Length: 325
Image (tube, rainbow, N blue to C red):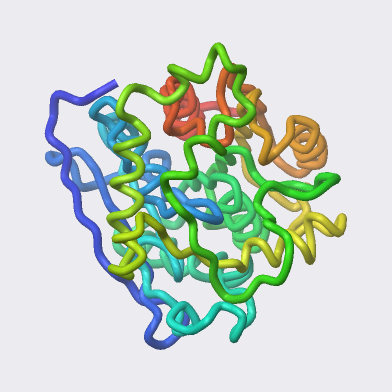
Protein backbone atom coordinates (compact mmCIF):
# COMPACT_ATOMS: atom_id res chain seq x y z
CA UNK A 1 0.00 0.00 0.00
CA UNK A 2 1.25 3.51 -0.75
CA UNK A 3 -0.50 6.84 -0.48
CA UNK A 4 -1.08 9.26 -3.32
CA UNK A 5 -0.80 12.00 -0.73
CA UNK A 6 2.63 13.29 0.38
CA UNK A 7 3.83 12.46 3.86
CA UNK A 8 5.04 14.92 6.48
CA UNK A 9 8.23 13.71 8.15
CA UNK A 10 10.35 14.98 11.01
CA UNK A 11 12.74 13.65 13.64
CA UNK A 12 13.98 15.32 16.78
CA UNK A 13 15.43 14.88 20.26
CA UNK A 14 13.33 14.99 23.42
CA UNK A 15 14.24 14.89 27.11
CA UNK A 16 14.50 11.64 29.01
CA UNK A 17 14.23 11.33 32.78
CA UNK A 18 18.04 11.52 32.99
CA UNK A 19 20.05 14.73 32.74
CA UNK A 20 22.07 14.96 29.49
CA UNK A 21 20.35 11.94 27.93
CA UNK A 22 18.17 12.72 24.92
CA UNK A 23 15.80 10.34 23.17
CA UNK A 24 15.13 10.34 19.44
CA UNK A 25 11.64 10.43 17.92
CA UNK A 26 10.72 9.94 14.28
CA UNK A 27 7.32 11.31 13.31
CA UNK A 28 5.35 10.73 10.11
CA UNK A 29 1.81 11.46 8.96
CA UNK A 30 -0.12 12.55 5.91
CA UNK A 31 0.97 16.08 5.01
CA UNK A 32 -2.58 17.42 4.93
CA UNK A 33 -3.63 16.06 8.32
CA UNK A 34 -2.43 17.07 11.78
CA UNK A 35 -5.23 16.10 14.18
CA UNK A 36 -5.60 12.44 15.17
CA UNK A 37 -7.57 10.47 17.72
CA UNK A 38 -6.18 7.70 19.93
CA UNK A 39 -7.30 5.04 17.44
CA UNK A 40 -4.94 6.49 14.83
CA UNK A 41 -1.90 7.31 16.98
CA UNK A 42 0.90 4.77 17.40
CA UNK A 43 4.47 4.57 18.70
CA UNK A 44 6.93 1.88 17.56
CA UNK A 45 9.59 0.46 19.87
CA UNK A 46 12.74 -1.22 18.49
CA UNK A 47 14.56 -4.36 19.62
CA UNK A 48 17.81 -5.14 21.42
CA UNK A 49 20.26 -4.48 18.60
CA UNK A 50 18.88 -2.21 15.88
CA UNK A 51 17.26 1.21 16.06
CA UNK A 52 13.73 2.15 15.03
CA UNK A 53 15.15 3.68 11.87
CA UNK A 54 16.86 0.41 11.03
CA UNK A 55 13.83 -1.81 11.66
CA UNK A 56 10.88 0.41 10.86
CA UNK A 57 12.13 3.09 8.45
CA UNK A 58 14.23 1.18 5.92
CA UNK A 59 12.75 1.70 2.47
CA UNK A 60 12.16 -1.79 1.10
CA UNK A 61 10.79 -1.55 -2.45
CA UNK A 62 10.14 2.14 -1.84
CA UNK A 63 8.22 2.02 1.44
CA UNK A 64 8.99 1.48 5.13
CA UNK A 65 6.75 0.23 7.95
CA UNK A 66 6.44 3.81 9.20
CA UNK A 67 5.52 5.03 5.69
CA UNK A 68 2.86 2.34 5.36
CA UNK A 69 1.15 3.23 8.61
CA UNK A 70 1.32 6.97 7.90
CA UNK A 71 -0.09 6.47 4.39
CA UNK A 72 -2.94 4.55 6.01
CA UNK A 73 -3.96 7.71 7.85
CA UNK A 74 -2.15 7.15 11.13
CA UNK A 75 -0.03 9.48 13.23
CA UNK A 76 3.17 7.45 13.54
CA UNK A 77 6.00 7.90 16.02
CA UNK A 78 9.08 5.69 16.39
CA UNK A 79 11.39 5.87 19.40
CA UNK A 80 15.11 5.30 19.87
CA UNK A 81 15.87 4.79 23.56
CA UNK A 82 19.24 5.77 25.02
CA UNK A 83 22.17 4.09 23.30
CA UNK A 84 20.33 3.51 20.00
CA UNK A 85 19.83 5.36 16.73
CA UNK A 86 19.64 9.11 17.12
CA UNK A 87 19.40 9.03 20.93
CA UNK A 88 22.25 9.95 23.26
CA UNK A 89 24.95 7.36 23.82
CA UNK A 90 26.00 6.61 27.38
CA UNK A 91 29.47 7.73 28.49
CA UNK A 92 30.35 4.04 28.93
CA UNK A 93 30.25 3.61 25.13
CA UNK A 94 33.49 5.61 24.85
CA UNK A 95 35.66 3.47 27.13
CA UNK A 96 36.53 -0.24 27.09
CA UNK A 97 33.32 -2.27 27.43
CA UNK A 98 34.39 -4.27 30.49
CA UNK A 99 35.04 -1.13 32.52
CA UNK A 100 31.28 -0.71 33.01
CA UNK A 101 28.25 -2.90 33.61
CA UNK A 102 25.60 -3.58 30.93
CA UNK A 103 23.56 -0.51 30.08
CA UNK A 104 20.00 0.31 28.98
CA UNK A 105 18.20 -2.55 30.69
CA UNK A 106 14.46 -3.12 30.23
CA UNK A 107 13.26 -1.01 33.12
CA UNK A 108 15.39 1.94 31.95
CA UNK A 109 14.12 1.56 28.39
CA UNK A 110 10.53 1.38 29.69
CA UNK A 111 11.18 4.71 31.40
CA UNK A 112 12.42 6.13 28.11
CA UNK A 113 9.32 4.82 26.36
CA UNK A 114 7.22 6.48 29.04
CA UNK A 115 8.98 9.82 28.48
CA UNK A 116 8.25 9.58 24.75
CA UNK A 117 4.61 8.60 25.28
CA UNK A 118 4.04 11.47 27.72
CA UNK A 119 5.56 13.85 25.17
CA UNK A 120 3.28 12.58 22.38
CA UNK A 121 0.13 12.59 24.50
CA UNK A 122 0.79 16.16 25.59
CA UNK A 123 1.65 17.33 22.06
CA UNK A 124 -1.43 15.71 20.53
CA UNK A 125 -3.82 16.38 23.45
CA UNK A 126 -4.57 12.68 23.93
CA UNK A 127 -4.86 10.38 26.94
CA UNK A 128 -4.02 7.12 25.14
CA UNK A 129 -2.16 5.76 22.15
CA UNK A 130 -1.20 2.40 20.65
CA UNK A 131 2.17 0.64 20.90
CA UNK A 132 3.97 -1.68 18.51
CA UNK A 133 6.98 -3.39 20.11
CA UNK A 134 9.36 -5.80 18.39
CA UNK A 135 11.50 -8.49 20.09
CA UNK A 136 13.19 -6.82 23.12
CA UNK A 137 10.98 -3.86 22.27
CA UNK A 138 8.10 -6.18 23.08
CA UNK A 139 9.54 -6.65 26.55
CA UNK A 140 9.88 -2.89 26.98
CA UNK A 141 6.41 -2.19 25.58
CA UNK A 142 4.67 -4.91 27.58
CA UNK A 143 6.43 -3.91 30.80
CA UNK A 144 5.37 -0.31 30.25
CA UNK A 145 1.80 -1.41 29.52
CA UNK A 146 1.50 -3.44 32.72
CA UNK A 147 2.54 -0.33 34.67
CA UNK A 148 0.52 2.23 32.68
CA UNK A 149 -2.56 0.50 31.22
CA UNK A 150 -4.62 3.69 31.14
CA UNK A 151 -2.21 5.22 28.60
CA UNK A 152 -2.23 2.27 26.19
CA UNK A 153 -5.21 1.64 23.93
CA UNK A 154 -3.94 -1.48 22.13
CA UNK A 155 -0.64 -3.37 22.15
CA UNK A 156 0.95 -5.12 19.17
CA UNK A 157 3.91 -7.40 19.89
CA UNK A 158 6.11 -8.69 17.07
CA UNK A 159 8.07 -11.78 18.16
CA UNK A 160 8.38 -10.68 21.80
CA UNK A 161 10.94 -12.27 24.09
CA UNK A 162 9.68 -14.93 26.45
CA UNK A 163 11.01 -17.71 28.66
CA UNK A 164 12.82 -20.42 26.71
CA UNK A 165 15.19 -23.28 27.32
CA UNK A 166 18.73 -23.35 26.03
CA UNK A 167 21.06 -20.50 25.15
CA UNK A 168 19.19 -17.56 23.59
CA UNK A 169 20.35 -16.36 20.19
CA UNK A 170 20.91 -12.87 21.62
CA UNK A 171 23.50 -14.02 24.17
CA UNK A 172 27.03 -14.53 22.75
CA UNK A 173 28.26 -16.06 26.01
CA UNK A 174 31.26 -15.00 28.07
CA UNK A 175 31.85 -11.75 29.92
CA UNK A 176 29.92 -8.72 28.73
CA UNK A 177 30.50 -5.09 29.55
CA UNK A 178 28.53 -1.96 28.67
CA UNK A 179 28.44 -2.42 24.89
CA UNK A 180 28.99 -4.76 21.95
CA UNK A 181 29.94 -4.15 18.33
CA UNK A 182 28.04 -5.72 15.44
CA UNK A 183 29.56 -6.22 11.98
CA UNK A 184 26.71 -5.41 9.63
CA UNK A 185 27.96 -7.44 6.68
CA UNK A 186 27.93 -10.61 8.80
CA UNK A 187 24.24 -10.26 9.60
CA UNK A 188 22.74 -11.55 6.36
CA UNK A 189 23.96 -15.13 6.93
CA UNK A 190 22.66 -15.05 10.52
CA UNK A 191 19.36 -13.56 9.36
CA UNK A 192 18.80 -16.44 6.92
CA UNK A 193 20.20 -19.27 9.03
CA UNK A 194 16.81 -20.85 9.77
CA UNK A 195 15.43 -20.48 6.24
CA UNK A 196 15.30 -23.55 3.95
CA UNK A 197 18.01 -23.32 1.31
CA UNK A 198 15.53 -23.21 -1.57
CA UNK A 199 13.78 -20.22 0.03
CA UNK A 200 16.80 -18.07 0.91
CA UNK A 201 17.21 -16.36 -2.44
CA UNK A 202 14.05 -14.24 -2.28
CA UNK A 203 13.13 -13.92 1.41
CA UNK A 204 14.76 -10.48 1.54
CA UNK A 205 13.55 -8.46 -1.48
CA UNK A 206 16.14 -7.55 -4.10
CA UNK A 207 18.40 -4.81 -2.77
CA UNK A 208 16.72 -4.97 0.61
CA UNK A 209 19.73 -6.05 2.63
CA UNK A 210 21.87 -3.28 1.14
CA UNK A 211 19.14 -0.73 1.89
CA UNK A 212 18.88 -1.98 5.45
CA UNK A 213 22.65 -1.95 5.97
CA UNK A 214 22.91 1.64 4.70
CA UNK A 215 20.05 2.79 6.93
CA UNK A 216 21.43 0.97 9.96
CA UNK A 217 24.96 2.33 9.56
CA UNK A 218 23.64 5.87 9.07
CA UNK A 219 22.64 5.92 12.76
CA UNK A 220 26.10 5.06 14.10
CA UNK A 221 27.78 8.23 15.51
CA UNK A 222 31.23 6.64 15.90
CA UNK A 223 32.88 7.42 12.56
CA UNK A 224 35.65 4.87 13.03
CA UNK A 225 33.10 2.12 13.63
CA UNK A 226 30.99 3.29 10.72
CA UNK A 227 34.02 3.10 8.43
CA UNK A 228 34.44 -0.51 9.53
CA UNK A 229 30.73 -1.11 8.77
CA UNK A 230 29.97 -1.77 12.42
CA UNK A 231 27.49 -0.42 14.94
CA UNK A 232 27.70 -0.30 18.73
CA UNK A 233 24.74 -1.53 20.78
CA UNK A 234 23.83 -1.83 24.43
CA UNK A 235 24.31 -5.05 26.37
CA UNK A 236 21.51 -4.37 28.82
CA UNK A 237 19.14 -6.68 26.92
CA UNK A 238 21.71 -9.50 27.13
CA UNK A 239 22.05 -9.08 30.89
CA UNK A 240 18.26 -9.08 31.18
CA UNK A 241 18.22 -12.36 29.26
CA UNK A 242 20.71 -13.90 31.69
CA UNK A 243 19.05 -12.58 34.83
CA UNK A 244 15.46 -13.19 33.80
CA UNK A 245 14.47 -15.01 30.61
CA UNK A 246 17.14 -17.74 30.75
CA UNK A 247 16.66 -18.11 34.50
CA UNK A 248 12.94 -18.78 34.15
CA UNK A 249 12.02 -15.39 35.62
CA UNK A 250 9.78 -13.14 33.48
CA UNK A 251 10.51 -9.41 33.37
CA UNK A 252 6.73 -8.92 33.49
CA UNK A 253 3.68 -11.19 33.61
CA UNK A 254 1.54 -11.24 30.42
CA UNK A 255 -1.47 -11.81 32.69
CA UNK A 256 -1.00 -8.24 33.92
CA UNK A 257 -1.61 -6.77 30.44
CA UNK A 258 -5.13 -5.32 30.59
CA UNK A 259 -5.48 -4.01 27.02
CA UNK A 260 -6.24 -5.78 23.71
CA UNK A 261 -3.18 -7.57 22.32
CA UNK A 262 -2.07 -8.67 18.86
CA UNK A 263 0.80 -11.18 18.82
CA UNK A 264 2.71 -11.68 15.53
CA UNK A 265 5.31 -14.38 14.94
CA UNK A 266 7.19 -15.83 11.96
CA UNK A 267 7.39 -19.58 11.34
CA UNK A 268 11.18 -19.49 10.77
CA UNK A 269 11.98 -17.37 13.84
CA UNK A 270 14.80 -19.05 15.80
CA UNK A 271 15.34 -16.08 18.14
CA UNK A 272 11.87 -16.59 19.62
CA UNK A 273 10.74 -20.20 19.05
CA UNK A 274 7.07 -20.88 18.38
CA UNK A 275 6.63 -22.76 21.67
CA UNK A 276 7.71 -19.62 23.54
CA UNK A 277 5.10 -17.64 21.60
CA UNK A 278 2.41 -20.17 22.47
CA UNK A 279 3.36 -20.02 26.14
CA UNK A 280 3.23 -16.22 26.07
CA UNK A 281 -0.20 -16.22 24.43
CA UNK A 282 -1.65 -18.66 26.95
CA UNK A 283 -0.28 -16.55 29.84
CA UNK A 284 -1.95 -13.35 28.59
CA UNK A 285 -5.16 -14.02 30.52
CA UNK A 286 -5.84 -10.42 31.52
CA UNK A 287 -6.31 -8.97 28.04
CA UNK A 288 -9.96 -8.18 27.22
CA UNK A 289 -9.29 -9.79 23.83
CA UNK A 290 -6.23 -11.08 22.07
CA UNK A 291 -5.10 -12.52 18.74
CA UNK A 292 -2.10 -14.53 17.62
CA UNK A 293 -1.17 -14.65 13.93
CA UNK A 294 1.64 -16.86 12.65
CA UNK A 295 3.25 -15.45 9.48
CA UNK A 296 4.39 -18.13 7.06
CA UNK A 297 7.86 -17.94 5.48
CA UNK A 298 9.11 -15.29 7.88
CA UNK A 299 11.97 -14.94 10.37
CA UNK A 300 12.58 -12.72 13.38
CA UNK A 301 13.25 -9.86 10.92
CA UNK A 302 9.94 -10.25 9.10
CA UNK A 303 9.26 -6.51 9.05
CA UNK A 304 11.94 -6.29 6.32
CA UNK A 305 11.09 -9.43 4.33
CA UNK A 306 8.87 -10.40 1.42
CA UNK A 307 5.85 -11.02 3.68
CA UNK A 308 6.28 -7.79 5.63
CA UNK A 309 3.05 -6.30 4.24
CA UNK A 310 1.11 -8.94 6.16
CA UNK A 311 2.71 -7.64 9.36
CA UNK A 312 1.99 -4.04 8.35
CA UNK A 313 -1.65 -4.64 7.43
CA UNK A 314 -2.41 -6.81 10.46
CA UNK A 315 -0.92 -4.15 12.76
CA UNK A 316 -2.87 -1.34 11.08
CA UNK A 317 -6.17 -3.22 11.10
CA UNK A 318 -5.83 -4.32 14.71
CA UNK A 319 -5.14 -0.77 15.86
CA UNK A 320 -7.83 1.00 13.85
CA UNK A 321 -10.60 -1.61 13.91
CA UNK A 322 -13.73 -0.62 15.80
CA UNK A 323 -14.70 -3.71 17.72
CA UNK A 324 -16.77 -4.07 20.84
CA UNK A 325 -15.92 -7.34 22.55
